[in-house]
Length: 409
Ligand code: SR1
Ligand code: MG
Image 1 (spheres, rainbow, N blue to C red):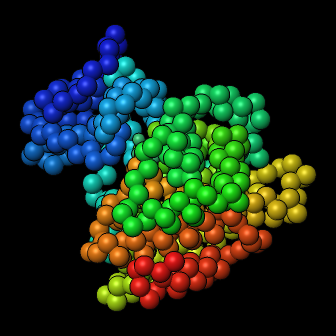
Image 2 (cartoon, rainbow, N blue to C red; image 1 turned 135 degrees about the vertical axis):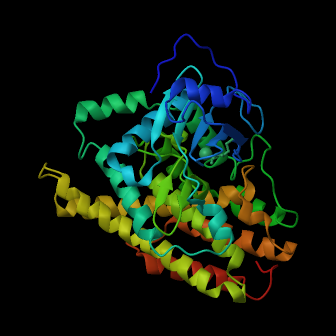
């Protein structure tokens, strides 16, 4: 890695990015002819692929700007430093599941990292109906190995508190606190985007249900106050890449010390979007069966992995009674956050691609009602211990309510 100091932040362009990479790494040969493509499709940052035309070797440059890419609202650059640090930590705890980072330039808020284009974005792959038999094993392993060792069950207590302080991420947390955990139920900024025909349903089920508000408030309070583990913070299917050999996780810029259930719930919640889109399609039966099994397996494997992780814990107070109660609580909270994710992608202003792909408005409405109804069930959490199969049976119960036509409910 080459050092470069005294620089101020400026946005990279397709013209300047190759020189930027050459100045900071020795990855490409001097004579290599480099091509550059801007490939970012998210709301927040800029992403470039730099490639040696002849050898095909390539790298990714990800740069944060002071203004959000989509809305041009201001957003602090320190998120890029947090992302670089987390990728470095993941490089130690889950090296098989993250791209290699070659250089982080703090002044430019830019990361130069391994190109993972032999992997496909999971959201895109699921939209295409692809199945990945090992995904439940891989993502559960990632969640358990990335989260549990950052808790003070395992970490030195003083060091853990230092980490809580150094990963404070107020601006990115603020986005989640509003977009995910407030506005879908209380549209105080007037930013919700409601599908035509869903207005009454949203008002009655989300804006007026006081017992739902109480349950969401508990999750919001947890998100803001439970400094339990170092989270990825935005672990939706667009942050995960897969192929038949493996899985990579990217984009941990929302990372902070929060409830580990937020990451677990985000994964489970995001699998529900391709599921509801395809659930009534006869030609996607095998896909939806696999997806439901995958959701159930993730739930069960994470639970099992967390229980087993207590083998690393040396303090005898954390006995089997504590472990069982603690992990049950984490899993219950995970379902709650899966529910808030399902609902926020339906009514909030950061949508997902799956939900804009319906052939008819009535099918879209039916899918949105299923997500809201199931999301509410998960958030209210009127169940004690639950396993993956029971979660899926509850989902099927809700789907059954809307089986006949798109306007039920
Ligand atoms: C303005 S950011 C909108 C959403 O994109 C990110 O990936 C997070 O999910 C956030 O809620
Ligand atoms: Mg992101």
